[in-house]
Image (cartoon, rainbow, N blue to C red; front, side):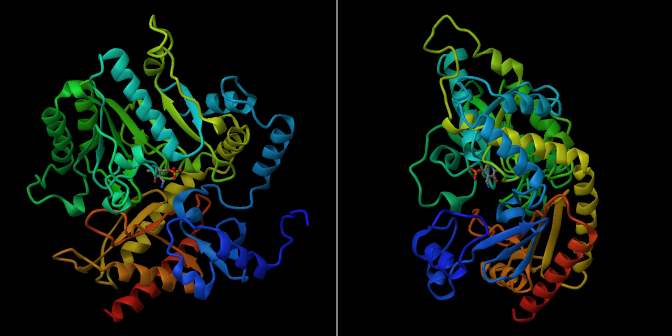
Length: 463
Ligand code: PMP
């Protein structure tokens, strides 16, 4: 029978999924008993499973992606028309939506000028690493190949991007890693290092990066890759003073600043890009999830004209242009969807809404701290929020991972999907992550907070 959307037998779908689909980030053993969850419908901030259960999705497709919400026929319509007119040609040639989207995007990114298209956050970061490596060979005679990344940051799932990831449990089984990726310390004020200057923690934390550059040798370091706000590593915004100092250090040692906006990009934190809150000027910016809100696979590696110029011409043809391709970077569905996605963000004032609803959510969650002693910290920016659970507020001893599992399970049973940072980084698996769609309203945030209130209260009472 020909495939028809919305014409399926639920039992058949669940059985086929259980027998043949390998789910991401999942233990499969429980599926043998319960069957996998299959999502069959989405609308606004809500999704429905094959059993007819409705959920408020507080993490935009589990991994902070669907920024404009589900069921956007206006994106699907444009993508359909685009695919019929012209679906694919490699980016060795241009295409209409890629050209139009690049202009629209660059208008929001002063100081940057070139967009390189690929399909995933990992791939966008790989392209950035390759750009840095090629510059090292072209401009610095094979030196400056090192790329610094930060403890607790995540940059992707491929071997090179995992080599640049500071989340131990994600890397754990996949070594050996690519050489010349070097870790620098995190900047989580709530978990400030013992020896840190607590009065000037932001500057102190940035200075730790300088120490690593000096220890490695500034002439060997090509780039520093950072998330503007660490997302999956625990929702960590850098403290006051951090970014200005980071920018200073990069300039001083001729180190390219690469900001990974895969999560924060396209409005998530209330500005177009996370880095724009901090008055810095990156050399390379990567983005993926919110670019087309999951309506098509697309990612971008955006650079300054200065970086691009280095690849424009070269006497040595082997070293000249960027010798890289992404087959599906030539799919037109991505930029077509991304264009409409940006129009929606603008027309519906979703950046402003993310700021307002984020502030409302933070306020309500901080209110819960009076009630639940296991909430150690509530933090975030816009609609990117983390709740760190602890056994004791004074010692900040993290709760066991099973507590987060229980809270998430309780919320799910009450029709609310929340996120978590479990098994993701070296020391702490104790943070709940929230990243609802930017269309959230007070009522949605109330439902979310009530579900969390109930779940945390229930789980804490059994600890
Ligand atoms: N960078 C960051 C900050 C991410 O959070 C992610 C995905 N969670 C990635 C890169 C990798 O993106 P993708 O899964 O699309 O490869």
